[in-house]
Length: 409
Image (cartoon, rainbow, N blue to C red; front, top):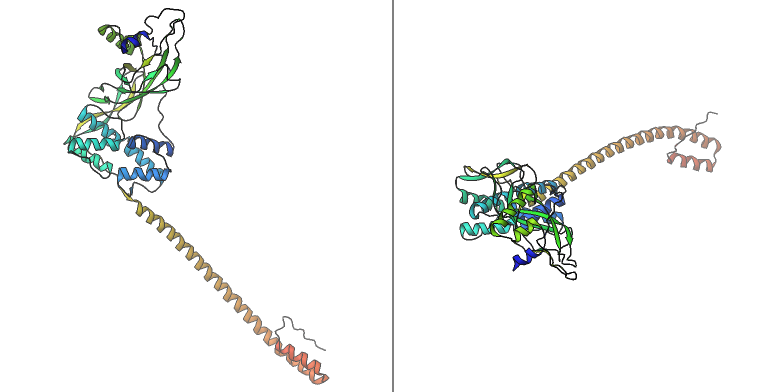
């Protein structure tokens, strides 16, 4: 029934230029990507709180990998999402490899849930603790004396592979610009290197929607299948190109006219009648299609290598120790300030002593001058015998005048 409905509905899947997934640059974008890998979706809250939570999951409660926010997020991104060191892939890539090794398919949930599922499969129950250590323990149990490493390869242009839609897509409900996601349904290999394991994810966009019209004209839906993400999170450009369409035609010929044939060949027949309205196009979740690589791409894939897993656990820093370091820095700054103040005080005291010495010298000189003045005044007092003059002379003797005038008559 579903096939007949799809067969009656004409579907034209057109191409547009692929929109490549940009490498996140800002701290906010990078922690968003870390959250998506850890939990399955970006989290809410301040940057600091989100980084603390991620640190707790990856390195263990109360631990971090660095002091500054920039370095912490960079370490998380490298350890969780994408590591350029081929010998030590990111946690996400390592989990992809283990899932593929055990089940021939990778999952799309957050790594916290996926690690718990792997532990249950391997040990019988999930474990607790730092996620990087748990992944390392799993690798030793799963691989023994082997492990997966990354290897650079060239994935040829026009490499055709099967996909399936993750969600329903319809000309009745979708609008231009709506995202379309899909899942790779078969392994894509280059020699012995696994580039796209079954279960890898891809994305596209609805580029055109036409509603059903009169005279039996059915709706139409144009989708651009833009990119698929490799095992190492590289975006590989894809299209519904001629090789993929030829593959669809071959399958249509093998099984008769079908959904695949309708997709490849476009509208198959029209419902007659001037006032008859056509039908909407509907592609249910799970619909299988073929797409192909748009161009040759140098990317990385997984290769099984002899030797025990060699993933290195990053050195931990206790967040309390970080706080202590910060407090010590503040304390050192305070001590330096105190030394500066003390030195300033000593300098001030030295200036004060110098000033006091100068005052004492001035006072001493003034005292000597006063003695001479007193002699002069005594002579005047004896000569005039005026009590007022004697009182003034007494007052002058007790004061420390700033200027003393001596007259020679």
